[in-house]
Image (cartoon, rainbow, N blue to C red; front, side, top):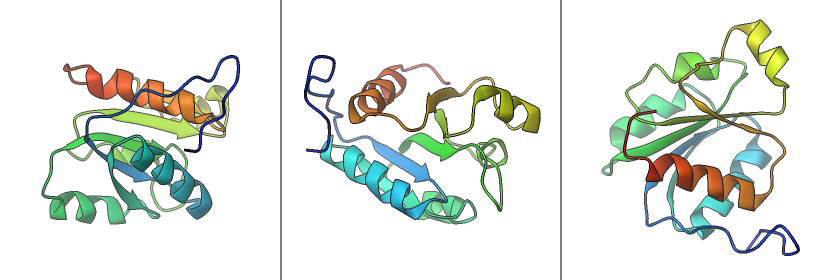
Length: 136
C-alpha cells in the first residue's frame, strides 16, 4: 500500500466500498489519489476535467457518497462543480486558505484537505466525512 509507516502513520482506516468522485486537473495527482482510495476499499470515479464529472455521476450505477475536488481549476472551480447534487464534499488544494478565500471559490459547508497530504490524512478525512450520516 502507498502510505508511510512510522511514528504517526499507522494503517489508514479502510472504507467499506463507498463511491467517491475525484475531480483533479493534475493527472498525476488524480491517479495517485485514486490509487490510494482504491487500495482503501473505495470505488473511485476519476475526472481529469471538471466538465467530465456530471457525466460520470449520471452514468454511475452506485450512489456517490463523496465528491473530492480541487478548489481552483481552469474550466470550472470547485465551488461551481459542487452545485451538482452530490451529498458530501471535500475540497483539496495546494493553495493556502487565504488565496482560496480571495478567489471566492470556497463553499463553507465543505471539508478541506491541504495538498500535499499523506495517505493516512486522506483516509482519516474521507472516513470522517462518509461515516457522518448527515449532509455536509
